[in-house]
Length: 276
Image (cartoon, one colour):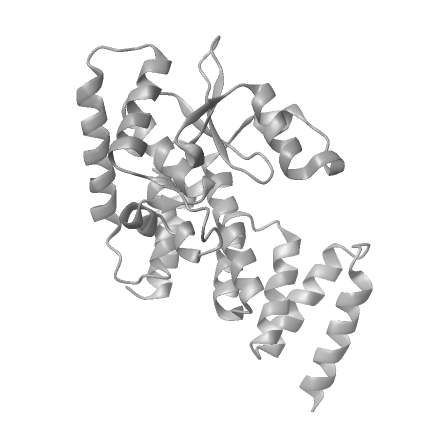
């Protein structure tokens, strides 16, 4: 499958409202641009089979904590899934097919797996986009608790989440209860793409970074910073006219942006190159 077809399928999927598409399918379509031969349905069937194993062991259990314990035992003890602390920034940690094959990932991809399996066994689990560390949350009232798939499904209270944030950021980031509130599946896909973009930019892989930005703009066409970054990446790749269009559009819609003077300099440079 070529990139354009994979991109078309991703665009069609995210047009559906929240709850009307499988989160794992969106994650696999993100991976399909890197792996054109990836068969999305094959991996979805593997996740289905895993969920069936957990479901068969639950019987008539409805209490959430024993269900979580059974899911944790299967996923982390029996299957051996774990957080990749040794090679955290390996791009394979961001591709769900690789996570399924290698049984290692980062918080958000392990959370996508957890959400997928939990939902199939009837557990109301949602993603939680805490800064620096993605979690999942059991959200049925009155019982609310958080789960960390990166650390073998450890159960957390809100106080535990706050301590995690403080350990990562110290006093640089004040606590906000919004950090542990549910986020949509669209927002989860967006964060997965942000992670990939950061890695590719750090590696200087402008072509792949541009592909990620283009998918971010499918999710959120209103994100002007991504329009700006698309322009900057296109300039790096030699598409000067497209770069100029994006950067001019960015400034037209956000003339007071903090980086307006820098972008103006880029625009001037692009015009000079095009005149030559």
